[in-house]
Amino acid sequence: MNASTHDVVVFGATSFVGRILSRYLVQRFGAGGELKWVAAGRSKARLEELRRELGPGAAQLPLVVADAADEASLRALVKQARVVVSTVGPYALHGEPLVKVCAETGTDYCDLTGEVQWIRRMIDRYEATAKASGARIVHCCGFDSIPSDLGVHFLQREALRRFGQPCVNVKMRVRAMRGGFSGGTVASLMNVVKETAADPALRRELQNPYSLCSESSRPRTRQPAVKSAEFDADFGAWTAPFVMSAINTRIVQRSHALLGQPWGAGFTYDEAVLTGRGLKGRLAATGMSAGLTGFMLTGALAPTRWLLERFVLPAPGEGPSLKDQENGFFDLRFHGKTADGRSLRTRVTGDRDPGYGSTGKMLGEAAACLALDIGRPQPPGGFWTPATLFGDRLIERLTASAGLAFEVLGD
Ligand SMILES: NC(=O)c1ccc[n+]([C@@H]2O[C@H](COP(=O)([O-])OP(=O)(O)OC[C@H]3O[C@@H](n4cnc5c(N)ncnc54)[C@H](OP(=O)(O)O)[C@@H]3O)[C@@H](O)[C@H]2O)c1
Image 1 (cartoon, helix red, strand yellow):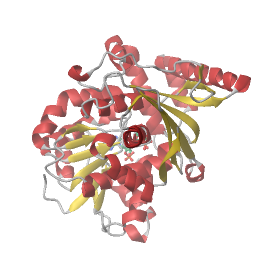
Image 2 (cartoon, rainbow, N blue to C red; image 1 turned 90 degrees about the vertical axis):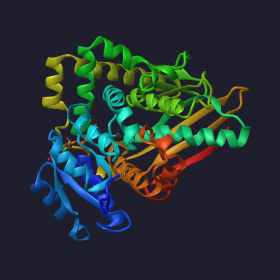
Image 3 (tube, rainbow, N blue to C red; image 1 turned 60 degrees about the horizontal axis):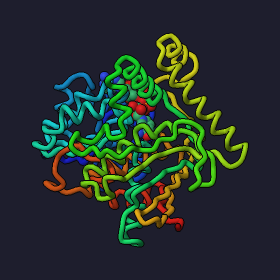
Image 4 (tube, rainbow, N blue to C red; image 1 turned 180 degrees about the horizontal axis):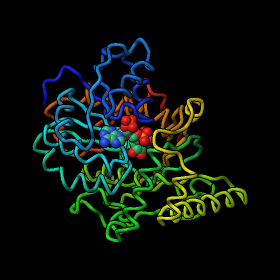
């Protein structure tokens, strides 16, 4: 562990989501309050502009310049604080040197990646190093995958309290959601589509619902997945595929594996979007499924991908307006069943645009949790998930300060 006097360094403070995170940290902690943090990025001028935008409360905010591709500058960066938060994405293009340096130096790290193929690579390359150095690495600390991962953690905790047993089947359904996409998210998604289109072995690995579990902790249970319009009797409504399920389901399965499979080797988990009842719900589910398939196919072919990136999708640095971030929200419903057929319904809601207004707050609280609530030397170093490293401590922070609610609805 380094001896820095700061708690957190935000690398990528000038990215679209980094600016939201920085605003949140200033409002919540000031520049040198309970959480002492540093803003970092590749451009001194952009960092100074950000500090001016953040107002008088940030006048004393320390700034550090580092480049994601320059390992020496990253080694100097991680000396600034005990925890590094990164929003520099696409992570598959820019993220590896920082994970390597954190794993080697025993520096705790969290980020916003939702890129399964990159997380798999990082675990394969740096898990042993992080275990040896004591670095706790936690990917997916935004809308993907905190609400899903902590949502299942919350439901299972309640199932154990009520029934004395866990739920063996859990579903998450997006009941309602309003939000947008930023250029960084689109670039990350496009890069996943590009990498998988070029590599059939990678495509096969990513289709495996246990792709983020170690080889020795992959059960044989077939996982359900909503791939087209389907009626869901548990919710009495039609469902369509949910784009984030590709990462969220993998993180939930990794949490289960890291915990030693307390919900049983037959545990299943899947995610989908609720589109309503009757013909209207069916048509909406069919339209949404076709739209998602079309988007993936368009993104997989180089010429159409170029057209999408050039003319349709937001560019890096762009994203939903402040008004849209504030008017956004999400409402996720969970339904679990125990082995003897008892059921439990819970929900997780958030008060801002899921990917930005709310993600900035989730990432800020995850970083604060890592810096202020998680002790040393336990839990040990390695690649954790939000539920396994933070669990209830992060739920408390998110409900107290970040506009999230975790509620039991009944059976
Ligand atoms: N998990 C979630 O729910 C969630 C939600 C939102 C976003 N995300 C992910 O978060 C990431 C950021 O998204 P965004 O929209 O904020 O992206 P963005 O605005 O495009 O920002 C990318 C950032 O990377 C920085 N950067 C690029 N190359 C660099 C280098 N060589 N050295 C240092 N910095 C470099 C850029 O610096 P400059 O500022 O100097 O240009 C910028 O700050 C994406 O991967 C996205 O998928 C995840």
